[in-house]
Structure formats: C-alpha cells, structure tokens
Amino acid sequence: MKSTGIVRKIDSLGRFVIPIELRNVMDISSTDAIEIFTDDDKIILKKYQPACIFCGNADNITYFKGKLICKDCLAELKND
Image 1 (cartoon, rainbow, N blue to C red):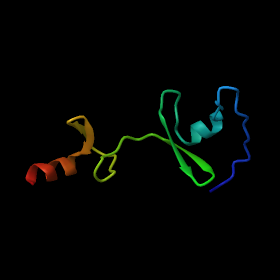
Image 2: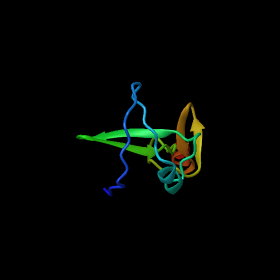
Image 3: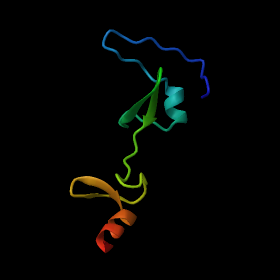
C-alpha cells in the first residue's frame, strides 16, 4: 500500500471528501459508485465495476434473470 500523505477529517454524518487529485488519478467521477471493503483494521475504497457473478470478469457483461453474467459464462450455461 502506498501512502499519499493526505489526511481528511470525518464530519458529524460520517462523510469525508476524496481529494480531486486522487479522483483524477483513479478516474473517479462524481457519478461513479464506490465499493467499500475491510481488511482487518483497514477500509479499502474501490471504484465499483460490475462483474460476472460466476467468474468475476467485467467485460461483455449482460443481465440474465436479474444477475450480471458475462457472455462466456452465459454461453457455457446454454451448453449445459
């Protein structure tokens, strides 16, 4: 993990601002969703990218019965 040297306070509603410099570097816009993970005592933020529920692939995603699935897994399901 790389330190940025940036420190932000959390407001009374539990919010903080991700600095514009980091948003630009990480290609995060104001309309993007952010995933939140935890690892022991760490909170990890990641730009949300929808992915296949079976293989985790984020390319060629489509909805199948309300779930995200990639074209490869969908083809494999059709063959079974």
